[in-house]
Image (cartoon, rainbow, N blue to C red; front, side, top):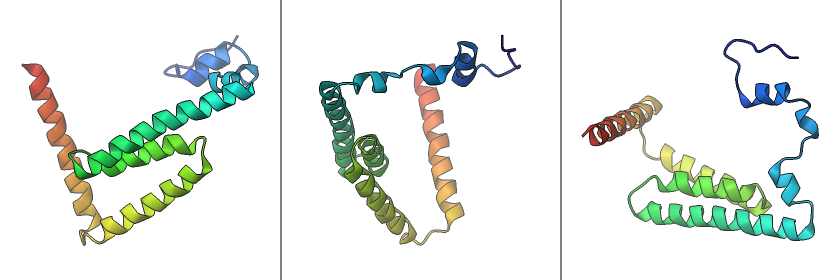
Length: 130
């Protein structure tokens, strides 16, 4: 019987208490046991990642953090498709170059981002407090 350390109630500790978690099969492994399951999983990941990538592309020209949404969609796609990982790295490089061209010092960028986060949190708090 493992003793519970104070403040350690994470998933890892729960798995340790329940026995050898390495021999237990996770959902993705269970799905991918058959050829049909592998095809289903790739289609499922493709649909989810593709939808998020398309929504991010729309947010690039509309309101919202488009590049972050595109990178999230590509990250999901990269779990199953190697080409998506390459595209994601290229997109990150392009975004980094664009950020460098703004000419702002890093501390100014961080200040603006944190200020935007604070304003967003205050706005949400005011909206939900009514």
